[in-house]
Image 1 (spheres, rainbow, N blue to C red):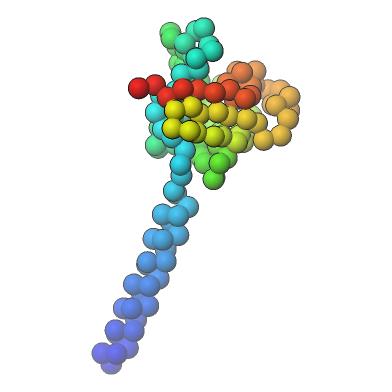
Image 2 (image 1 turned 90 degrees about the vertical axis):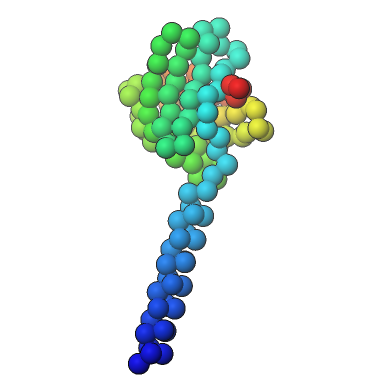
Length: 130
């Protein structure tokens, strides 16, 4: 009887370990969080990415848009926004520790519903703000 209980306990622990390992692997991302400035934007535009999966687009004076995002490998996915843009929309990103660059997956012209997003993600590089 004791060996059955021990076997059930061991199987349970193995099962829980597998679940925890799967969850940690799927949530792991190298996508950076923080405040990023577009050095080529004369209005002081930039993006803020938070660890909770939210983003904010801003310029010196205003918050321009907000939404949610997810990351899958080197793909950034805008899941939602309050700017009237269709979602989801996916972009490849690179980050070298300072510079964060986005490029559309597919044709940027297909994102006809959102001029602001095209201006902010069509081969645009942001610099991490210290």
